[in-house]
Length: 75
Image 1: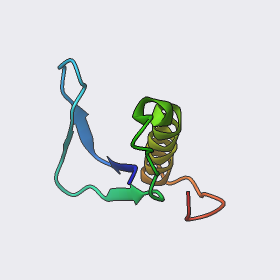
Image 2 (image 1 turned 135 degrees about the vertical axis):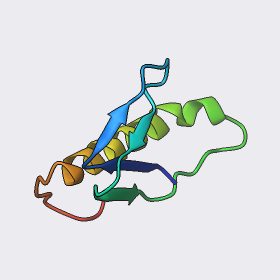
Image 3 (image 1 turned 180 degrees about the vertical axis):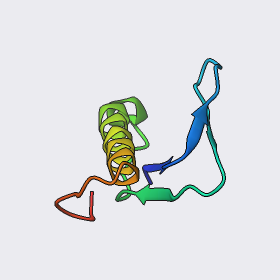
């Protein structure tokens, strides 16, 4: 499942992965997208679909945390 989280109050740590540290009194959003089938014989072929689904989940979580209205609550 492509999953992403965002918060209204956070600090980005100055590390290689820019880890987000949630701060107190903020609101958190957790977005889960639909399952992605990965074929056993070609797992590398599913990478573009996985990347697109993760990016969509991140964009949706960031938008909801920023207070933007979304057209649909489903990815």
